Each structure stands twice: as C-alpha cells, then as structure tokens.
Image (tube, rainbow, N blue to C red; front, top):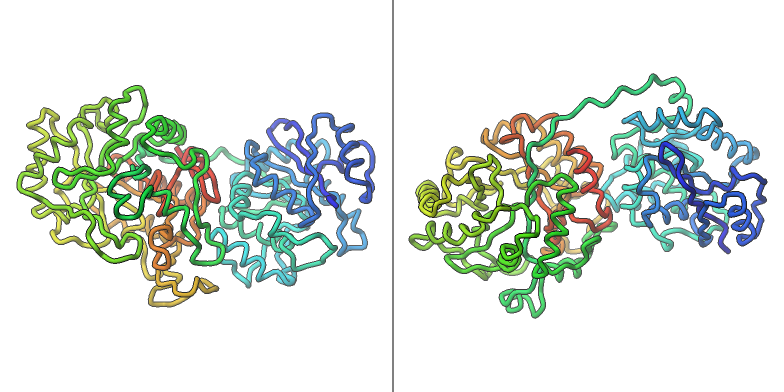
Length: 597
C-alpha cells in the first residue's frame, strides 16, 4: 500500500521547494490515515499542492529520489526535504522529528537562515543541530551498500571516514540533486518497506549523501553554524576564457563505407547502444537525451546543437574533416550546412589526418582507409577546405585569419615543408594567412615537429594526462578499485580526479609549448568502441568537471594561448566525451560550463 506522498507547492522567495510538507499543514495527520484520505486533506489545506502517491518502497528516500529523477526539483536554488515518520530507533521519535523540522524551518527565522545557506558557497546541505554524524559506529551494516551505490558515479568511499546528515530532513542545493540523479536509482533498487532498522538501500543512501557532498567540494552546515556565521562575502570573480571551442564529430549519419565495414545501417549510435558495462555500476550504455538519436543529414539538428552550445558558452565547434588524398568521408553534414546559411553554426575545421583502422573497436589493425600524402597534397587539401573558410560562419578568432587544426602533425612526411606549402596554398587561394594549430598527443609520431612550427597547439585530454599514479586497474600496480571489473577485462581504468590534478600542476604545464590552448574533457569511457579493452575515467561527474573548469581559471588561463579553452568533446558519444545532454547526468555538464562562463 502506498504510504508516502510527495508534495509540490509554488516556491516562496528565494526560490525553494519542499517535499512531504503535510506535517506543516493545519490539522495533525495520523500515520495510519488511508492514502486517499490523506491526499484529499493535503489538497484541502494546500490548494496549490501537487500530491503524488508512491509505492511502499525505500521509506521516505525513494519518493525523494523519484522526484529528483523526474526533474521536478531542477529549477530551484534549494530544496527542503521533510518526512512525517517517527524514528523506530528512538523512544522520543516524535520529539526528535519535530526537532529536525524546527531546525531547518525555525519559524520567522527561516528566511534569513535560508539566505545565509544560499549565500554560503561552501555549504551543500543544511541539517538541524546534532544531525551531522561522524562517529564510525553509525556505519552500521551499510559499508557494502554505500560502496555499491557510489560506484555508479565513480566515488571510492573511505571505510575509515564517515560524515553524513542523519534524520533525512534537510535543505539541499542543486549540485547534490545532480549527483543523486547520477546514481540512477529506481524502484527496483529499494526494498519494500517492512520496518527494517538498517542495511537497506535507503539507509545506505543517507550515508552516501556525505560522500556526494565531499565529491562536490561542499560541506554540511548545522543550524547553529548558520546562526553564528557572518554574512558570506560575495564570491571573488574568476578568470574567464576568451574563447571556448569543442571538438565535433560528424559521424552520426549513414555512409556507404560504414555499411560495408560494420554492417548496413551502421552509425556511431549503433556502437553506443550496444555497449555493455565492464564494471559494476558503470553508466553504459550511454544514450542521448534532449536531441535523441539524431541524423546529421537533417541539418536542422545542427542548429539545435549550436543553440544548446551557445547557451552554455561555447563559441565554436572544431569539426573533424576527413580527407584522404582527395577522397572525402563523413562530409555530408558540413556540405549541407554550407547550403543552409540561415543556420547559426559557428565552426572551424580539424583535418583528421590519420588512417582509419579496425582496431578502434578492439578488433584487428586492418587499415580501412589509408591516409596518404601524395605529392602536391597540400594544395589539394587547401582547395578542398577553402569553401568552408569562405563561409561567414567560419571562425576567425583574431577577426582576420581563418583557423585550421591538424590532428596528427607528426604523421606528416615532412612537417616543416608540408606546413610551409599548406600556408602558401591558402595564400594563393586568396585566404590570406591562416592560423594553423595542431593537437598534442602523448604518443610520438614518425616525424617530430618543432614547437614553433604552428601558431598554436591544442591539448586533448586524456592524452598526456594519465599517469601511473592515477591508474586504478590495468596498470603496473594492479587493481586498486576495491572491486573486480568484468571477467576478461584488459583495459585501463584511471582516476578522473588525478587527470584534473595533472592538468593543473606546474610540472605538467612547464612541459607544454608556450602557445598551447588548455583542454578539458567532461568524461571519458570508450567501452562502446573497445569493449573489454576499454579505457575509462573513474569518477568523471559534473562536480568534478566543475572543479576542473574553475581550476583552469586559477591555474591555466593566464598562460593558455589567448586565454582559450578546448573541450573534448561536444558529441563523442562512443568515447563518452560529450557535452550534449544524455547519460546519467543529462545536461548537467552544460550547466557547469554555463555557470563558469
């Protein structure tokens, strides 16, 4: 029998929302009141409320998680979660519950305390006095359950540390809502309510919240701390990027080559949809959200993508251009775009000059499409790219020079001579001096390139940022995950947090050419392509991505080429390097980027 009700009411100012607010109604409610009667009474007392009856699973936690997953709490600056049950652990259960509620809704003092909570940038959750538990005895029988849930977003709990809000009555900020959604909990994860005192998913969830708060770089506040706190100062302004680009993959449409190599109807979505987890809790398959399984031959989709990107603060897409000694592939989306000048899609090209091999999905190294460099290829390439550069939407970052990026410069047979001839070819075509850049890889190519050959270099995480210290599985130090991946796994699992630390370290940046654009990635997991040989970043979630962005402001933007940032990537779905909405976190990474810009 459903025993919980989630109540939706118009938010007061500042914008907030409460759940299970029936306890604040005008008449006392007995816990044995039938659900239909209870719902009717709530609607009578609160005409603007929305009542949602829920199955009798997971105590008060599952109804809350259900509202989180449904997105109903997304627009709010803070959410107040309250329940009406008495604690079976305590003889004074009713007095305890009232203390918890009065601690976060202290009558006329609620508004100023809530204002302090909202203004406190380090505060993630507000709970009544005495309800921030850190004593190890409160682990109970929940260690395994906590580890199992946190695995879903790549957090490894410290079994010797505990910090969580007890009582399940609190105010919580949006970052926590985002991470809760990333747990991907549903009805099947929660036990039927039978008065269990410990060891259920609901009990584990209470303790998980403390780790989510820590992962977000936030803290738990008790009421007395907010009462004693000085008004929070305004946050210091952070350094902002002058230009933000994102790599863009035009693979999402059918081609004769893909039909022949991988099977009729194949697109990048095919690989994404058939991916299967290589470890317990992994977010696979990763499926699209707002834009669905789009076909880039439908050029209007590119306008929708550009609108999402623009709103989040992305200035241009760096689109991969596949050209093999005069042969194009995956060119249809951009060709169609040239014929649709009304679509606002700012872009520039990256020549993806590497041979296509079958080993991208862990199979043989058979060459599918060889990248040759026939005599005179520079002029032919320039002529092929020229129509794009003449499009008004083509990016000229300095207002004069069109930009082109070379994906693998060390694959060029004579890098210095090839680049000189390419520059001259663009000049001959009337395009003037082209701003040429190149991607930095962690693997040296056949022909080393001088640091000053290009106008700029582009970082492309995770290249060059995964070190042995950050290897959690598959490296020389063996399995440090705390659990085993799937049988037969031969890939590499590494620490996303360590990648961030490496990116921001002076030791790493000192090795980069001075004219390097700083790069970030929202996540990485190429299980869709490599299966049991996959490389994936453990702990890549929106709060960590946010830390990386603000870390760039503090440590990298001052020395990044023209203060720019490159994101890997907009839509590399088969590598889970995507900003587009989808997967466990929806559009949260876009929200992090928008806040930072």
